[in-house]
Length: 84
Image (tube, rainbow, N blue to C red; front, side, top):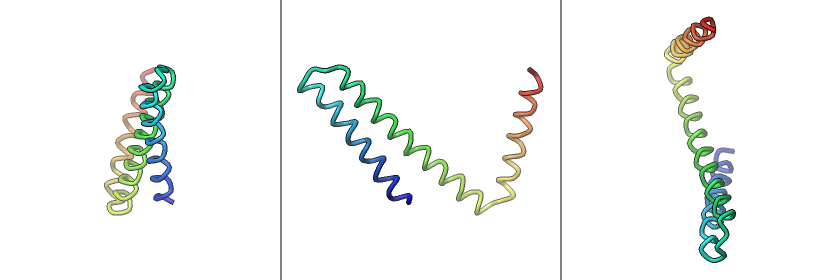
């Protein structure tokens, strides 16, 4: 499952690069913008997936640390919410 998502991300990055490069051939700035947007979205999806995997691995390896971090984040969120 992770490999197919990685493949999809790499495919989106490639499509974005091709669209960005086609601007040089056709002179279409809209196509270049779409290509850059697709490339940036694919990169951000890749980094978010990596961050999610890292958090999952950390949670499995050190559940007490994960519980402590989640508690602190929840406490800070409650403080910010109550100040409204």
